[in-house]
Image (cartoon, rainbow, N blue to C red; front, side, top):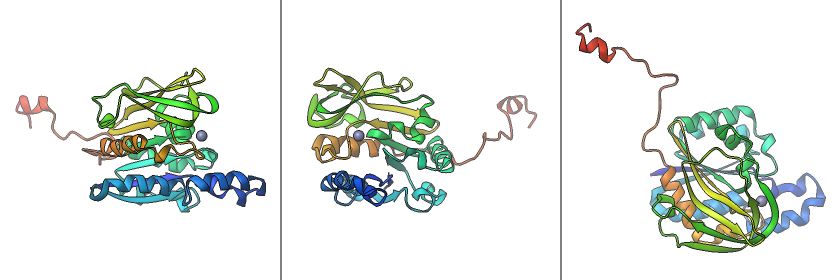
Length: 255
Ligand code: ZN
């Protein structure tokens, strides 16, 4: 059983509460994600059936929805954010980073490339070149990777926001997917990393007004990523493990 927590800043869904001028955009987002992006993603992950338990968490909840108890009860955390990265408290970022280092899986989606959590774990700016909606072709460039199982050589998204290179990330463990946009940009759009005991997957499609999370190939990728990122072992000791008897002492018969 994989315990999944889906975190969403939940800002686009409520932005008219902050300024009425945002109402048309909020309605556009809610037309695609009527119950919020977190619930769109929850419905997607729920297709894994008995393999998962799912909880959603949002920035407007106490502790940004991620108190230690929630992270202790999470095997894989999905993170969607865009407008409110700065409002995520640093204590929460510390906590998520530590949870990943101890083995929790992390799936970073779309504009969360600029989240504090991802930037902290990468150690780089995570900047990209940006253009508005374009046609996108996603190539599966590492077909033997677990996240690529069941995927065709490539698939297409009629409308998705264009992110282009250079994507300022450290060298990934694997580039599983590459994107080409019809305005001539390319991106390493599906990358894996390891930090401590934790596995991380970044995936670019998923702009708030687009329907990429309803695409069957995108759904397969995210479900595969949940299974891939689930920890096989976790580090439970805080700080460096203490060695009571060294191997050398044993060899010399001193202990
Ligand atoms: Zn976007």
